[in-house]
Length: 73
Length: 436
Image (cartoon, rainbow over all chains, first blue to last red; front, side, top):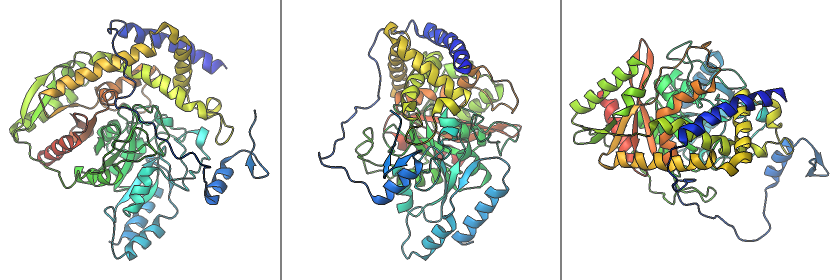
């Protein structure tokens, strides 16, 4: 797509400019998150879903066949 | 005036409004108001009407993110913050306009048209929570919710002359927020007063197991603990601020604001933020990658449209550049450097905050631009984030309170606090509001 190509070519200049601005940042610890992430898990059991939610979700789907959302592989 | 009458009046005002702040109204708002009026015991938000940024899921309303991608996405569930608001009898009035997927600082990048600034007509309202701030400023709702990734609550509040607050990361659950950059996003309130903001903040804050970054704390009582006393507060002002402010009227407004704080008994101290000039490259290196990752689910298969097929240029830019960085990251000069610089900026901000209660300073280096001004170079738009993005990079808290104006164009004062010391920030905001 032309748009994407144009944006990428212009964007590369921005990235190089940003990269140049950051080149003197010392090799130091990387900050991904400012707080410790916790793993949130639930009991290993079949999930439940209300009929109401299921109906609402199916309405959003482009294609529903036999009560299931059908998507392209 | 009864609650029902107020809701009807605001819905009518939304219909007549010319500023394009609201994308959709809640068709059940009047019905909800009637039900609340009949309740013998009412919740903390009874009587308050609330506009919701269109990237927060409200069951039955369209969480479009102001994008063609999700223009038909009727949220099938409630965000945590919405459940909390409804429990406390707040009335959801509608969905607010915004920059598409929160990618913007002006409110011009909505797929459904830009939002005008009710306080400075013909100028941008600020973004990305443009409709939230403009709704409050024009009286279309009492309060509003926005989301803030690099200043998206504070910038529009600044430009529209209202109050806003971005809490410490993890204070408010992001469950049901359609993320822009999940390590930086945080939901927060906008209102016409600090009191209005803390009332909403108390309701939406608290632990939620469905957000893995939600802090394990349910003891928030910002309204009850609000102390506007300024006497003896230590307030820092970074010496780098004045050099980086582009518009003289903002520099003057900062000088006068610091004088007012000093006259009220605050102890003003000079601090330093030497890496402020690295903020924009650091912030965008992080955002491009996180946003690219966040948008991979918008492939149009199960809901919505494929994002790259229908999105606007700024959203496409962030996706394309995020994808490019991800491919080229073996060099370590983009994302990895951005993550390292994030650590440097965070440490510097913490150091500056060490000897003071809060920092005070500008929200934006420049006044809101007029519609039609050439901002086609994205770096001109990015520049707005200079003083707000460090707060997100550090995961700390900050709020904005109106300070002055330049021929009617609002200028806000930003108060920045240490992580988890949100109360200090709100206290100083309330104190400044009282003397403003």
